[in-house]
Amino acid sequence: MASDIISTGLATHPLRGEITVPGDKSISHRVAILGGLASGTTCVRNYLCSADCLNTLRAMQQLGAIVSPTAHGADFSITGTGMRPVAPTADIDCGNSGTGMRLLAGVLSALPFSSRMVGDESLSRRPMRRVITPLNQMGACIRACGREEGCAPLGITGGTLHSIHYILPMASAQVKSAVLLAGLFADGETRVEQPAVTRDHTERLLRHFGVPCEETASHLSVAVRGRAHLKARDIEVPSDFSSAAFWLVAGSIVPWSELTLRGVGLNPTRTALLHVLRRMGAQIQVSNERGECEPMGDITVRYAPQLQGTEILPGEIPNLIDEVPILAVAAAHAQGDTTIRNAAELRVKESDRISTVVHNLQAMGAQVQEHDDGMVITGGVALTGATLDSYTDHRIAMSFLIAGLCAAGKTTLLRCGNIETSYPGFENHLLQLTR
Ligand code: S3P
Image (cartoon, rainbow, N blue to C red; front, top):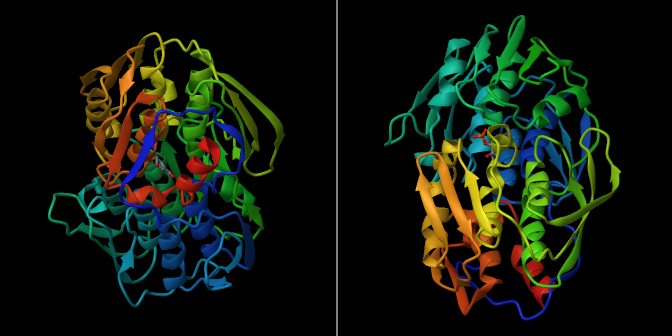
């Protein structure tokens, strides 16, 4: 369990060594769901054993999937229900995870029973209307029963669904995936059109499990046919690029660092940060590329003394949305302006990541201007250590612990126990690389 208060200080040594960050969060959620729906047994390697993903695995067990060994480690097998889940006997607890709740909503919508999904305080404030609207259009009956409008707990009465052609109002892989998962059970073709390309793990994994998933050349329109049957097939989850991102930035800004990250997921819908950092002058090499369903490889990063600010393009935003907090830390170390706009979705993540990033960077002395849909950071001002709130948001906690490595004095992060949500072992890696 990560401590709730962690401090870092100005790094007195370069970061050096090799690490393997834990499995990919987005892929792990989907492997649990699809493995739990498939016919047969899927052997899973390198699953992310974080609270979020274990909640999704537990949810699939509540729906009748069998997981072995039962004490969850990163490697296990899951025997699915062959598209015939059973009614859960208790609430499904999604903890802190928007991905878990939204994707499972897609599945539960199609099942002939009532169920209820609950989440922690942060998840109970996040918008669920975005999945409720299309799933109810397909014939489900989902009620948002939370204190705030459109928020969890969700009461779901599922049943026979009909297919839809849904135009996503926002670029969201979670909403796209919820509709596609519901579409697996519906009659006919379910098509989703997205305003920008979002992560495509659901589509890749569906194909891996033997379900055709058609895409236009632009990847903006995706379709599945209903009455689908998933066939179990073993899968290795790559390490999470979003977790590797902290070290890509740390290695770039801590003088004379050189470190290698092994087996990192390199799905092009996730790696926009790599291209942005290179554009800023970072020295990052990818080697040993491999992988079948999901590409992966090793990444080496070396200290880059002269990062330059850059403008993030609108089409890049969905493919680095989770990396914006750590990108903002890199931007504070770059000369000139870094502009991050068209990113209003950041306001409805585990915290309002526009306000929490701006607030914490300003507390460290950085020059940042807040906008409704993003921020402009004017880099090159030396940062000073500060006591900061992580707002119980794992990515805010880790980003500002990295910021502390290049700030004069001590940086202390409060309420950061949630680091385990995506990166169990982060504190150990921090110690290992900074020792
Ligand atoms: C995710 C999609 C993104 C991302 C989240 C994981 C997924 O959310 O921010 O951390 O696994 O599909 P949105 O779909 O809300 O953009």
